[in-house]
Image (cartoon, rainbow, N blue to C red; front, side, top):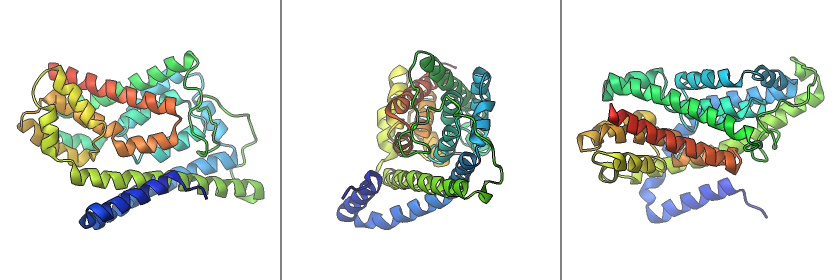
Length: 328
């Protein structure tokens, strides 16, 4: 009997917590349930849109709309990402839907990187917690990292890399993400056709189960990181001024999950304890884009080269943003 890797990992983690720290079971279960409930509307909407687009044939029209304007769409996607209310895990279903529709990877990567970093409510809270200058700088960093990632993907694809995007089992499996599939007649009211109706149900079910199990694992790990990773450890690693603390903050921020809103008072406290503002910027950006839970969700969705590019752009972008802000 072959076990599903995601559910097996969830079972192993829960069993380990039950043995090593039974008192954490309930908080982790409650946190996971609340987090899944929070992202569920976005997950269901994205899965339904992707399944509708594929069953009706509209995915070809959506993909075609992005042809011939990739450079402009990278900037547009980065700007839209900075305005969207998605966290690093919550954006995954939407990314899957866009790629399954045939939207090119370059603008999708721009949206993917910028989206978890800033939104209107995040801007207001950041300004109130860390100051207006920090909020403006983080917004600029979100846009810049999105554009950098999109342009980087475009450059890599022009050399023949990153052609295959989605893992098998997501949408149509081998979707290249940079090509529009063969034209087919669009049937907007596809539910009158049994074959298309069956394709919609199958696509929605498969994507919901596939993405849902990895998001559950991501949120379980998130709950444990919030419980066991002390803020004092972060301050000790990334305290001080200069290039070293910024790089250290980026490295720590990549594996350490931080909810964007909960991270603001934490970083404010760390800065009061000696962390440089540049290191604080790098920590917020790295944690927001490529924390372990988000990375697991991305790894489940994208093929290894795309996953490596995502992490690489996040690391370089967070470090550059921290150094730039520290130099102001």
